[in-house]
Length: 596
Image 1 (cartoon, rainbow, N blue to C red):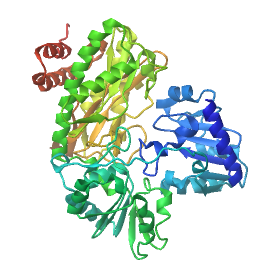
Image 2: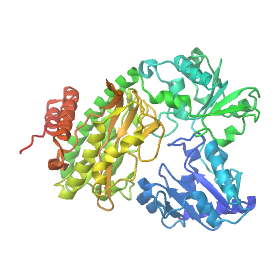
Image 3: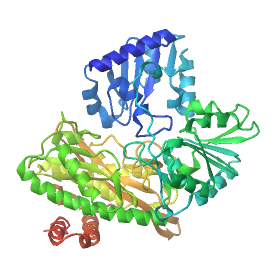
């Protein structure tokens, strides 16, 4: 706490020296990444808040931290005593950052930001809104002046992601990208998203936690592709591979000069939602700009059959690991020595025993009892709760395998659940099943399906604050776009090949949390006189806890879905288990038969 107060003092001194009245510090990097290298963790350094989403704002006399409902409880704990006020985004009484600044500053004041940390769209929008309030946006890296002991950028070598897993070579993918560039009448395409670069060049690395990406920039031209990357990250093998794919390699920061030297007659394609403002400013002002969603973003969201076969293999392996883990958990519960951190470590160990396992796809959320109500809870040595044979336990985890990426949440009863817990869990399950069974016409957006997961809860005045579904990468980012299923409008339509999560939840503060998450895959369903319809293939393979279900609240078709799902789980995973494990899984997958 004292450390944060000292850092805020240093920043305010630098602000005064530069004539800056406020500084906006987002929790991102120059690549618009979710997980970022230590070098770029500016918001965490200045505020102490380590959640994946949030922005700090520091004025000469105050400070605020804006984050969403996933982190309200988590952020409140970490900000206590720092003098930084928690600003709960999404609540009617909470002003957004720029309107808040308008109340704190006076006409003519200057607001400083590091232009590398903001996309050109966000920067342009900020500049306009601040100007309306007679405030000036200034591009200035204030943190560089005060964060003197920041870590260096990672220089670990990356590796080639073989076509046997990727399904398409870099050469083939570059052809697809150039076809999209041609449609947009673009000569040059600037790529800054690390997952876009990893997918396009079939490379993977370990520069950040959980996402197997490589810190780099890229340029695709009509006759050339260039990867901008630190020389230390190359090996003889990767150098040879890139040469074979006709990819030129230049130093990481050489992209700035390369952009400055683009011919004025060229049209440059950029994704204004991702490309940072500092890079954008390097493009000659005479160039025509094609500001559009990255074609790679769209292309990689639609998985090919090789990728999907890999994902199905990964799901079976994950199911085996989870089966062994939950058997261990049930037996270990009797000892009274299990805690949120120890079970997370053990789950990773079980996953690591599976072939082609590379790492976790995100930090495991192991929330016992009240901690389950903190949507993106992360256990610390101070908060690490002991698991007891009572209440319920929420476990959200995932693995990165060369075959694919997994993400699963299960909520289980560790003792005898209360009637309310069973009702809440069953309402979540009803939403999960209704979405899983959805049949929808081509052209449907995730926003239009979101109500299916919420209606059973809405009917009783209940809700949850997070999205229902996020896209998932293939041995890439566990959170991937552009598709989603959530209340916020998203113009992206769901198309066959997209992978997405189905994860409604219910959270009772200081009591418990419930979430049921499977990954699903959009596939063709049927063609009628009204057009082509699509549906979801459920990919995740692990039983849903039947002790937490009030079957009286389920319809016969919902029970049928659950029984069919459990039958498929057993048939797929059982052959990979020993006899004892099969017997355990068989009990968990026992079909429910109505007693009526």
